[in-house]
Image (tube, rainbow, N blue to C red; front, side, top):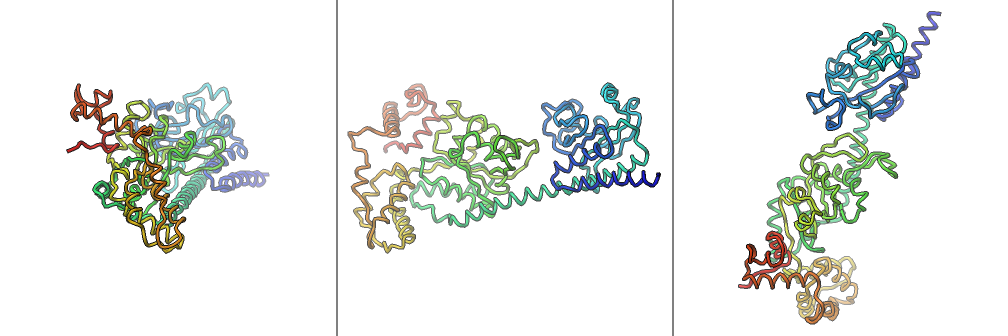
Length: 517
């Protein structure tokens, strides 16, 4: 009989050991351990806490007892009397209560007299549930403290069972560490796979420094700024009208930096619905919201040690701007549905065609985020302000699309070039590129066929209605002339227009207004 009982007990411990090694998913491993103690040993209550960062200090139930808020014990699994993970003991400071003391000392706590043990303060809970015994063990892997395993029982625990639980805790620590390493490896593989995809797209896109075309003083100034800021880690804010080539400048900053061998991750904030933008930027866990069928790695995490380019940054909703500001300041964030803090090293380049300063004044954009983004501003001049670059751009795009379409185009008539140089190109370089592509399609021989009449019809006649931008430019010009080009002061142009001096200066720069000599 004794031999049979011994065999039965051995089988129980073996079943628990097999349970904890049945999976490599951390959440599942922890649940298998605690539930195994309930099912196989008849425990009333079993829990596991793992070491983690101090992440819930503002609303932690034990915050007033915590002396070091950099790390604490996180409740990760609970079986038996309670399966909830968000109660009073979801976070336990190191050295506080019996669980924290086990973590601090690295020694087990075992007793069959919980009711009379001063280390257990909630005597009412002990009486209500008929608990008499407790066994708590540090989960140690080599010299590393992973967490604490705690178990309550309604029957006395034999001395050899305490010893076996200690052995089980050592096995549990190995299973937990294996699962942690496996999940970290899977996260790294997923991130590297997506990062490699971005790098491959960069190679296939064939973007290089030579694609930034321009010999004008305006473009030379831009390229000088790129060379100055690229070796640093400073945030760059690229401003300019639609079609001026903001992404090309962002790529140039990345390629001239020390991060050139890592991913250049881009996101157009205007192209993502506002409800999904947070998930795109920071990622989400499985089940974080309806439709979240699997874990998703966010763009910031993918850009670790590389560069993230946020185009149309002015479209980020106010409620998300605070989280973006935290990433820029602290280089850390949490995925949606997760409490695990992710630390990253990513350089941010932002771009916009909107007046962020005016948006700040209108309370549509956070001022602290605006100034954090605008560490190093680069303003791209519109094509109409650098007409001397138009012939170079025309020849570049004509040669490029002729090669793609295998057409022997070598000539561009001078009157045709002059007509294109006179046109304002409100869509900037993008409009010019699309126009030349169509011209190449229309061309049949060595001469580029350009529908010059179409350019003339696009131009706004003097008697026609002006665009909003043209009307704004004329209105500002009149105010400047009336104030003798004085911007500030009570009689300056800014006061006449009802604007801030800095907002007017930005408008003058953006609209290309210069004082006549």
